[in-house]
Image (cartoon, rainbow, N blue to C red):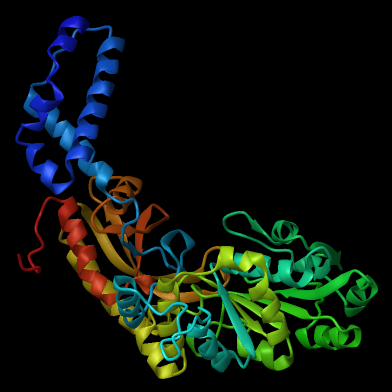
Length: 471
């Protein structure tokens, strides 16, 4: 039986002439389609040889349809736009902060053509790529100089390698953080070539602990903002000002890793206790490190600002070239920093700040309107607006709670988990959260322009068309 089926398999050339595959040759490419057909036939031959029962071979057209589906599925990028309805604004798995439209426009313009990345158009001589953003970073933070690398872990590693390679860096035990993706400060320090000198305990570190640890091999003192956890109760820590006085006494640099990257004061948005880069520089920190894609609201990058002599050490280090950013990241960062010069422009155009400043009344009205529309679909038994809490971040600043409104959904046919999966794998992809046997669509991190797409997705699940949406 198997031998007969193998003999009757259509040839590659025969399958290429079928209706499902012939248009794909022009749409995708001849080589991709041929490779797809051969791969499918190889797998089918293996299945036939392994089969012990009787079976029938589909005709050439049906085989071609299967092959076409497989090829088209393989051509789809795993990187897709997502509607974030989880209630986590800086969601690491979903790319953290969405970019402002002006930043996207600038990225497109710079990506489309050649760009003056390392060429001074006035003099015609070679320039440094950091010049595109250095003046803006210095203006916003008060620093003498700046550097930009691929992320804040890279900024930490490069800074430690350049300033303290082969020597000791003193850090409080209470600040030896671990964040998402298995990032551990001790491991980063080891990889940089610097040696960690822990002082104090998990809950209490005193200035005397730092002073007793300082020796001939000490290269720097380091403070790390513990943005993803809080130690409460019987605690004691050393302030930046105290650390700076000690560093002056011993002529040591202070490295201040503030993590999430607050360039402006976010207290008016309900975000408190996040160190501001300019304040750290004004206090006297020699180097301040932070992310570009979190509270700054820009592209993924790691930013280093501080005194010129240390920034020069960092930019001259061989690792700096390995960690540098490309022209597209620079373009997005420039546009975002320009917005941050004007707080009103930033509030109006940076998506993270837009979402943080959206009023509870606005969210409630949107939740009520969406709930009515979702309840009209066949797949939803009940949809109602509910108050809840959103969070600024998951792996970073997860303790910052923000009031929000959600649409709580009880499915009619599907289980909650199955409906969540269907929405997540749909087009557009909608990522929600399951809580207390309900599916929650948290509107705090859903942009208003996405409301209709959410409603349309539920109509698609039901096999219906949205009566409020034009054909």
